[in-house]
Length: 307
Image 1: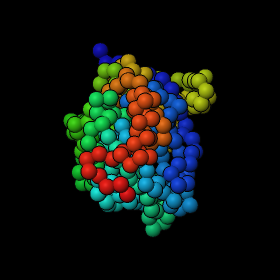
Image 2: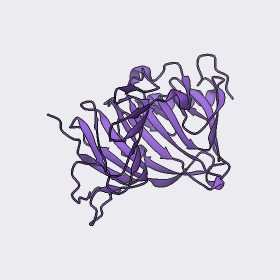
Image 3: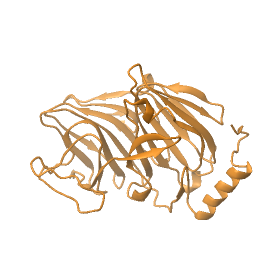
Image 4: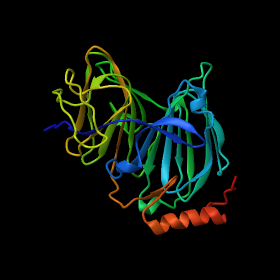
């Protein structure tokens, strides 16, 4: 029998400053480990003020993770120690597997109105893959298929599957799903989730009910507070909904307005996390070794050139 996933926690993204002085919103990060296993962090860097983003993210290292950047407005210039260099544009994705180590820079630029909008997700690598060879995938808009449902719901399928449409990216160990979903007003959408997988949504426009239960509710966990006495769990922009692990699908509906959101799911690793800055390993010893190698010039493998 089909069972909808219940909501476990609700978060509102919070302002943080990263890189050389980029002001962005963090939906979740270090303090939420291991709630989102196998995911580590989600940043929202939407802004119409160039002062928020132009300082960018100059050269910095990564090891042990994958970083996935999805752009909606503006552009992001990428350059890394593998020799990759290019620019991603609206609707495109850069999927970087840091593996044993990579050094890169990401520099955002606004469009002709000064707008930039994008999201960066960090996904953990299992212990067996922490030291694999780094890889960079440049995923153009034309490579990302769109699934269309009979009720008017649409989903860009970056990875995973929707309505039988496979995503642009496959072969990732945590078996992730990454959808950009739009639900019209007055519509209900059910989406199947694999048993035991972590699943969460992040709303980027409009409003919707992200549970089969639309009765008012609240949470008493510190940092988790989203409750409207009149509308109940009607979620809006910059709200993240984390679901419980039991259940086989998510049930999302709208009333008078449409809603657009990102949906993520993945297979938990259930492994220890040792994390400092841009490097995520399994033990403190591995973490210390990574920073020692970075400082002594032996961090990069595979004949990469240090910038």
